[in-house]
Picture 1 (cartoon, rainbow, N blue to C red):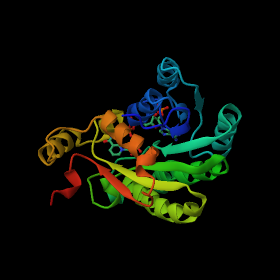
Picture 2: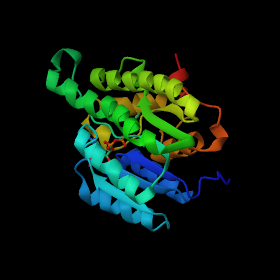
Picture 3: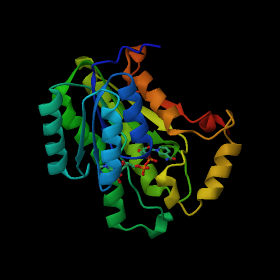
Picture 4: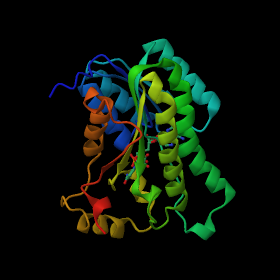
Length: 251
Ligand SMILES: NC(=O)c1ccc[n+]([C@@H]2O[C@H](COP(=O)([O-])OP(=O)(O)OC[C@H]3O[C@@H](n4cnc5c(N)ncnc54)[C@H](OP(=O)(O)O)[C@@H]3O)[C@@H](O)[C@H]2O)c1
């Protein structure tokens, strides 16, 4: 299906690996020019950059900690110089510390909330002057925003913050023709899951409780981003789209 995304310009935060990389590649497959940032993994970022360029689009990769205002400003300045305009922002970058709630420190709180939640708002603030009417902003969240999951207190809190900010941003940016939505993804077996002490149990439970009967792949998330990026969703804003094979609906 032609989603008519060709020639548009996107920023995907944290696209060197995992779900962000799948989103960036799916966009490039539609002819979207893609800029992305990353934190540490230069080799993976270079590999993603090459994969984007091989698809014939203009691509930009820059190391920029999304929690660092100076780095974010410099990244979006580079995007402005390369693209001039922006029609899509996907805030995918995330990090976190997996502990039981009583074991967290203020440092853990800042690390997680600064990257995941402030990173979203600051990316939108930097992108906003470039976003034309018809543009779309997508924030990647998870069920931990609204449910209790083991070791997930701070990441869950950061995702709840993202979801709330997305609703407020949808209200503020709607009159400019900019849509803001949340994509709440189910568990995907990326590097992120390796940090969970209960990874095996989490995977088994997820599979058992997923009505569609298989684990989610990064590409499943990426395809749904294409929908939220395209004019097929032109009257969808302030919404949360669950992409998890139905896991969220199981009581
Ligand atoms: N995996 C899951 O089960 C799952 C489920 C629901 C929602 N999600 C959400 O989906 C998104 C992607 O998750 P994932 O599993 O693909 O994660 P991942 O494999 O850990 O990849 C994270 C990506 O974000 C980048 N990143 C991390 N911190 C950053 C920072 N401070 N500044 C800039 N970039 C940063 C990483 O860059 P480097 O390569 O340089 O480290 C990497 O490209 C996250 O928002 C996550 O919460 C994941």
